[in-house]
Image (cartoon, rainbow, N blue to C red; front, side, top):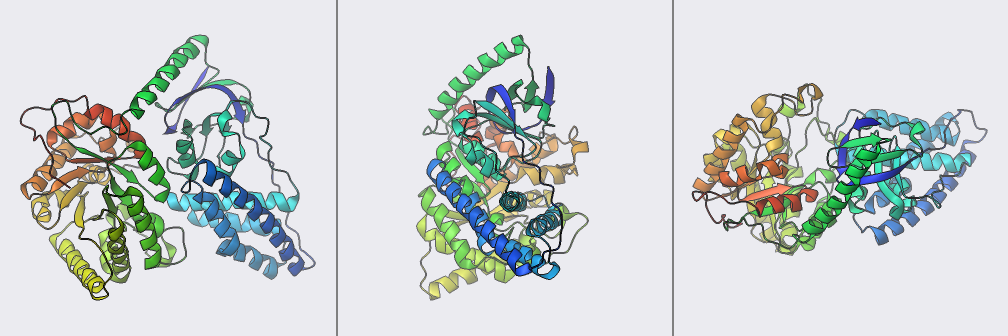
Length: 549
């Protein structure tokens, strides 16, 4: 038996045989074509065939998974129909008179290299789209058939990487789990695996020789067991049955209140990265959205989004959530999340550089467009705004002046909107130390414990060499959380936590004893945290009812 440790992107237990996903090898040879125009026509025919296949997958995904999960295929269709990707391919064929397959692979490699150092998941997903499209086009041009999954048996699918296209071409009822070397917890593939409730692991050093061998996937601990012994198989079969019962129990909590045994009420919200997460929010039973990251609208594109684009997205969220609160974080972009059209300079330490509200206050036209879009969408639901990386009173006062100007403009044009709440993300020691003053200017404070912890400890939370030292339970972190909650309540604000710490069930009682009003977590954590809340008895000195939001 061999044991491998990775990262779970969806929890669960799976036991079964391995099917290693082999792809047809692509040995792309460069050669000069006699007629560039003829080669472009050849490429365009392949593009039409690829579009037909993608439109079929889009329809299939829309029917079986839902509108949001099918958008990955819509995105690929858009890239093929009108994107700079296809223009670059045709331009290379025309200028260099090379064969189409070589132009496709070269363009793919150049784009992948350009975005390789960027950590933002939206950009990574865009790169995966380009890779997936490129493979499809090359296979069509080279006359190579794609893998046939028609007769597959129930298996654990193992691969270097998995694309949404490959998942949708498989029989989903036969998929026990996914295991791959590459990927991320918020990739399109991970989103689809969550929608299908299929356990998945990434970061496992997979091997083609594993084909047909027995394996166990532990999607809770992130462990992959290759050729487990009988004792372990029996143990995990019991765990699998218990897991199914636990999931059934948690589903019964979907419509339950977030209330402790002593009657203390809190609110459990969801964090989402894009519209693709809306369905999982609804299925999780969240009381609202405590953090909608708006970066998805600005990254992976060639120019600033128009106000109407922003408005339509926020309107959809507002209408989907109805009366439930939706807190939209204004653009938190910087040198670590690059949009080429913004022309942000490289920085040695982007986490400490020009990001969040600093960029927005520099680019007021962009900022006002987002604020107008949010205010316009507020007429369709229950929206609030949250500002990231605020560290001074002057910043929040400047923000309020801009908001007042936006509101005045909407009134003059008689555009309908609602009065909405405004809040600050507390994610730096500076914000904690002036939290009492900041709280007097806003309706709520929301602790972003991911950034706050790394700034308090002076440790990069993404640095693997610091994994054993980085501690989000550090006494200094907890003291600053308490200081922020106290400051909010003193000013009559409500206090929330939207960092990963809120989803740590070992910390639920501690956070409630601190007096937190709202906890916002990723959708899969909603029900486990709710279960924990409903088991807690708080001391008498903890307030029994949170400030209304």
